[in-house]
Length: 435
Ligand SMILES: NC(=O)c1ccc[n+]([C@@H]2O[C@H](COP(=O)([O-])OP(=O)(O)OC[C@H]3O[C@@H](n4cnc5c(N)ncnc54)[C@H](OP(=O)(O)O)[C@@H]3O)[C@@H](O)[C@H]2O)c1
Image 1 (cartoon, rainbow, N blue to C red):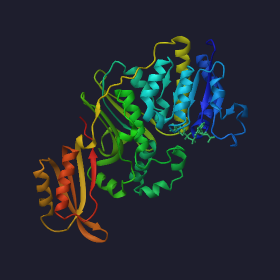
Image 2: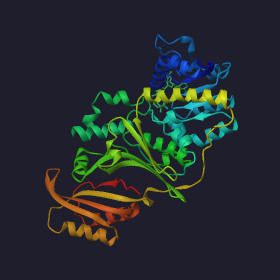
Image 3: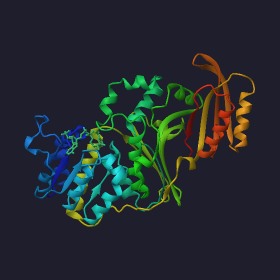
Image 4: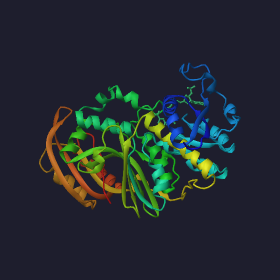
């Protein structure tokens, strides 16, 4: 049996993740001790409300509401941030780092805004700062980027980064039911984190994009500046029509290094049905990574839940054990910070699908496509069919456009609107463009 070494740690937060992690740690700590020699010892749990009832099987002496109790714990090596919010957590993390306590963070919103500051502080204090559990789920992607792909230049990272959104879209597609129907499923509240509830508008996914942009590309961008759309506007009709034209709708995060600038966005995207991303169903996430040396690489796994996240936190505790006992100075990941300009959504170039209901009369399609032509946008295909909109007979126009700057699409749409043919909402989806 390997020599035992003690890793004393504190858990910050005992909510959904904190309690899930506690159970996983209890179930696995002996196995980890036998296999690695590291004795993972929980010293304290920081919570907000001293008068909340805590599970009876957890030693009540572990709980504290005062960070000073943690800062003065002798021999404490690691703190796991499972709190959430920016403040007071950021101040708490800074105090822990200045006491040379290593950090494992699952705190998405904090990292999606303060990753650069925290990593600089961690380097200054020569402690380790591990961030992968913040992505939710259990897929090793940060570690893959930081270790296995260290010699590579990452040129593109695309992903299905929200297990909840992927579940919602998969259920709508497979069961042919509306978003409202899927939301009635008992699975939804079980999956969603207490803090993010359900991310309809894409901000939770944008936080993951911010963390990945920092990790893979060294781009320091707050999630609030990342273009994000969630699944709230995707209708069953959109899914059915996408299917009819050979596509499935997926919430895709897309990051690309353009040498002199950087592209980052997350939105519902039309993905060809034969594409590998379409096979990622339900609560699963996947990351597709393109690099100069390795070429193309994909990781896939469960994207939600406290068990997959706890799997990463336990791995990180062992990893820190290795670093602390075997290699205290080296192996600290240095982010490749740069100040690349992040493109505005109007500056991105991709393919598009447009759909709108029009007055049902001959010649409409010609008028619309002529306008698009005058904007020098390449039409890949155009289809029209008669349908109903609010009880009225209308002509539905479906147009697929080749790679175009989003600004040009918006200008063409402004001109089309002036024709006063449109009878309802214009739906516009970006199409996955494999470069
Ligand atoms: N849930 C997941 O599966 C999951 C997965 C990956 C990452 N995360 C991340 O983990 C974090 C926690 O998520 P959660 O779902 O576990 O949230 P949660 O259920 O709301 O739990 C939050 C915990 O933090 C404690 N807390 C809040 N403010 C505090 C403060 N000022 N000082 C000390 N403790 C404080 C709360 O204490 P009380 O108990 O006293 O209220 C509670 O125990 C978030 O950043 C989330 O993004 C969660």
